[in-house]
Image 1 (tube, rainbow, N blue to C red):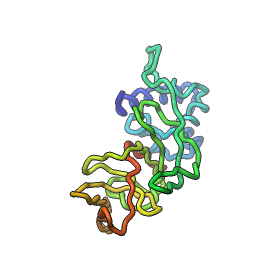
Image 2: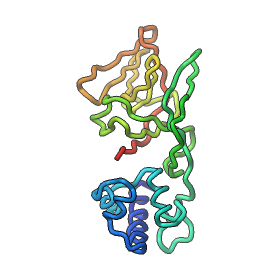
Image 3: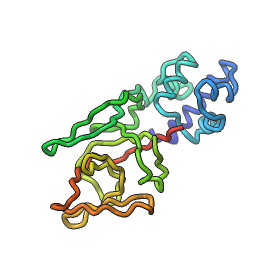
Image 4: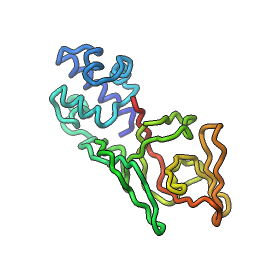
Length: 209
């Protein structure tokens, strides 16, 4: 199921349950700590709330989280469950092995967002991807993988710092291109000064409201 389909089903259920609880949009905004415009966007099917907010919404409406994604009149949902993925605060490298440390917490995530593979979240920590509408504090869903395609937004460990950049391979070099023109490209030569390891690729950015 696509994000657009999920958004449409969620918007219909959200609006129906809000009215059943006799709550206005501004009431929901206050209960959830978001703006009125965000609640309006949910009901228009323009956006989906993030995992922790979905959990709060389910608690307010006194339903299971998956019920928010079941189409009216359909007995079963294609989004059958939420899974918890770690938000990793720090990634280190020792002997060429990546270590995922300092788990901030676990983020409830629709299973429909992930397929085969290992996933986790990073937080955007710099403005190197501002041009891709990714900003400081946003949650970044990363699929762990070593192989990348040119132009993919990739999480890389440069020294001991995790960065998100568009990656391009050129001969034996890895070129990391920022989405912010104030940051020059980082050219990582095979035997150069930069010690770089590919962590994985960006699959989804969750805007921090």
